[in-house]
Amino acid sequence: MIATSLINLSYLIGALAFVWGLRLLSSPDSARRGNTLAAIGMAIAIIATMVQPMAGASNNYGWIMGGMLVGGVVGMASAKKIQMTDMPQMVSIFNGLGGACATVLAMVELMHFYNGTQALGSGQLVIVLLALLIGAISFTGSLLAFAKLQGLVWDNSLTLPKHNLINNVMFIGLIGLTVYLFIQGFSAGVGLAIGVLVLALIYGFSFVIPIGGADMPVVISLLNSFTGLSAAAAGLIYNNQIMLVGGILVGASGTILTVLMCQAMNRSLWSVLLGGFGGGAAAKGQESGDQVAKTVTLNDAAIQLFYSNSVMFVPGYGLAVAQAQKALKELDDLLEANGVDVTYAIHPVAGRMPGHMNVLLAEADVPYPKLKDLDDVNAALPSTDIVVVVGANDVVNPAAKDDPGSPIYGMPVLNVWEAKHVIVLKRSMSPGYAGIQNQLFFHDKTKMLFGDAKDSLQKIVSEVKTL
Image (cartoon, rainbow, N blue to C red; front, side, top):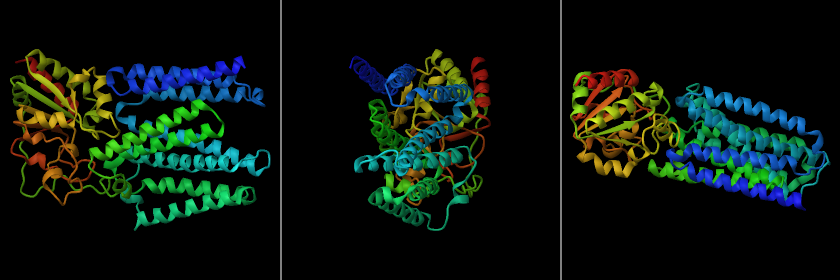
């Protein structure tokens, strides 16, 4: 009795650590502490689970420790080696592995059920089937999301004619087979269960295919919620409270984040799932008709920035690709020392995952109060002297405001053209992830500075130091 009470107390402490750690993750200033606290909670939960009396568990500790060792080594090596630009890919892979774990657990329980070594009631069978379906969809969907983010595949190379219709038919068939499997129960046999598993894996892959590259932050959040739900189902299967609580927290936070991402893009989740928004055959960036983009020299850019009253930086994925965040922070420090008010405009879907820019700037020790959200930025832009766009594209495109034919029309964007001057740092005139040309490049207030963002910023820093 005392041992059971201690185990339950450990689970409670672990769950509280999860909740408080998640709370701390809401701010870059406290995110590292939150991550550490959640990791401590997970360690407590693992230890409590391992000391919990379980039938036949004495012969499994070698496998358990072996799995923990392999997983720990892989996780540590990945965390040390991964570049910030590849963080979304790592999130997708780890998220998919979580779904795979739930799928394996569900399949093991089904194998025991059909082999006659374990009985499953109706409620238990429903939970097992849900874990199987959601986990499998999350697994293959996350793998494809990784491949898209890594640039290994392009949407148009996989999308079939009437792909959404194919997905709908496949989904209905999957649900129908699962219901039939549940109704038949033990008499259905393991073959049908394997068939449901295979179809769910195929559907997870097919489900993500038509979703455009610009919608990947939403997809990552959605798949994250799927993995959380599958983990919660696994917790119900094994009557493990900490798995249940952790799964619910991940599922709920992923769902909330998905809704927020959709609101930030002014699109419904259904329209995201239907796909067709960017990531395919991008429009050619040089096709700009008679429009001509004006350029600015490094010296002129440095002078403008140094003698301004207010400067706002708009970071995008290009900043992450160039690993230019520390060079940007150095420029920030020089401008602040000269009395320039420096802030950062953060769009909710900038980058390749939710919070990508926040994490990137936190790595460079940019104070969190300097990071402003969409509404605050747009209110401040008319009085801002210079906006410096570093690698952002679709989130500063005026087409979202004035071109009803644009695929991003209606999407809330940063109205940088309302500032007094705009400097855009880009390698070329190529379009963004949505695959459309950015009319900001040709705006009267805009001047382009071509080149690698890190190199350009370092040269601007050198110019500012001579002033």
